[in-house]
Image (cartoon, rainbow, N blue to C red; front, side, top):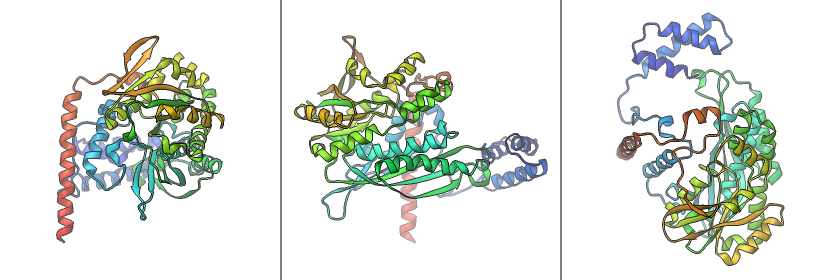
Length: 440
């Protein structure tokens, strides 16, 4: 619970019972005395009041009037993709070889010699795995390495960032690190540094954990999405999901499915491709994560200016049978959730070599589609061509997500206008602060 946020909202509403209410909220969550809870509530109110009305560019926040949940940010659908496009606008043009405008798995900059690239990525833990720190660590570490491998790069190091709320058990940190280093030791890629903090310091009570894992790699040839070309074929490896599938299994009490996600097949497949030298012939690679293959297809199409055509009959057999059975039983669209499979986009003459190399390390893979002229994506299901547009949010995979739904809000266009305005204001603020610093 964010007691600072609670106090600030009460002050804005001139709530005369704020101190009593906040004291009771604290006692509901924190194992402490009423005296300590009241003192904490009073201190929180004092601090919130001190920052309630601030002035100046550095202190005053940009406000859009649209919340993260309303716009679907983080929910891997249309709202989330739009927000990420705006993030790229605020960042602006950079000197990177691959930056946020490419919507790729990782960023890339030229090394000092100019004969290769340094690849950098960061992944946040799945928000619903807070109570399962080992699982959260395993999946976020694997996701971070996937993103580096997907750029045709061999990872060289991992780094972590862990935040646990004030009442969380310290052992959460150790369990989380154990999950990260399970992947680290299996792949031989060391965890070299990190940060460990409390969420919000004294202002967030409860046991929630969050954080992320970053990875760094090097390569001489990039396999970024922008290189996708008309005439290429699309290959996909087998996938059993990661944090998303684990979350669905946990919150629908199908816990045995979680174990299906514990593997490093994606990493093995990428390592084999790099070792074989075939990545120099690959145009693009990505992992099936953000909004499932629906979301990945949209991003690739937008970045490369091409159309993707998929054959569903080739895709279904590549999904772990136990995972697919669960998703279909729960009426979760397997094409709209993270499968953690590898997508490889390459000229057709290299397809068989790629398939053989990946199968040789025990990972199934097949051609599932092709790249044609046009834009967007379509999929052939039972001989019928169907639209393949991502939804407003990724497939609802927990009871709460099903309750919220994935339909586009009626005022989505109005919200987009507010988001546009906020992004523009943030960019202008950046310029003003830079001018202030340069003038000192």
